[in-house]
Image 1: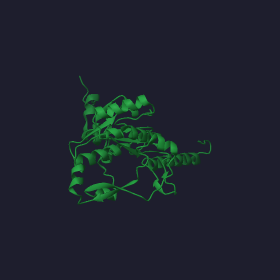
Image 2: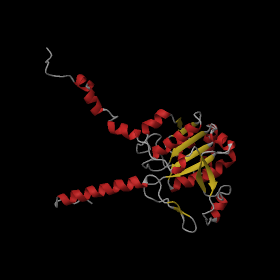
Image 3: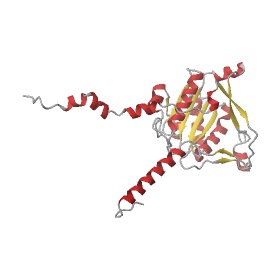
Image 4: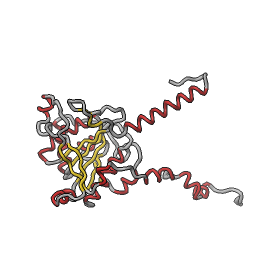
Length: 275
């Protein structure tokens, strides 16, 4: 006869409070996903446009001119907000596009929100625009391994750390054969643009891909990412273009917190010292 004072493990796991405590989706995670990061002022406008900025001057190495002849003279551009643009801009803005995005190098906080921001803006402009995420970094481009980014997928990773959604990798697209494979992938998917999220090496890769794909009218966009602050772009006169990329502030705060905890631990007991 079953003891009425006992409860089975099955019944226990069905208890709403137990399910809430044991669920992978806890209240903190729900609130984190709901958070809406503040927008830069320029993105509060109905439309944005790129305009050449002549304030920056660069000394270009002759090897760079040789290797990247079609893009090396591209000017720095600033994003300008517009609320009442010309009709031609409205048409370009609302056109259906196909965009690829890839993570490259070590993960950094904020990566998922790069995808979320791209997805939100692209779908707002045209709901039929498609975004593909390449799996496991540049290898995904070379091997044509990609998934379509959906709203439910974006919402699952919104505001969360890491590069878990599409993973990352450290492969380099640094030979003619790899370039050819990458080009074929981009053409087979019908990409209008490829977004590469990565550090200094990854953005160097992005520059060479931009040179390779320019004849196919596929735009390559590099998004600087680092947790160690090694992408501080300056022009020939020392003017700063990128003082700090996403990921650095959170990483610095996490490291500072870890050091603070070690200091507290060390000062609590003279017997142990942690280095």
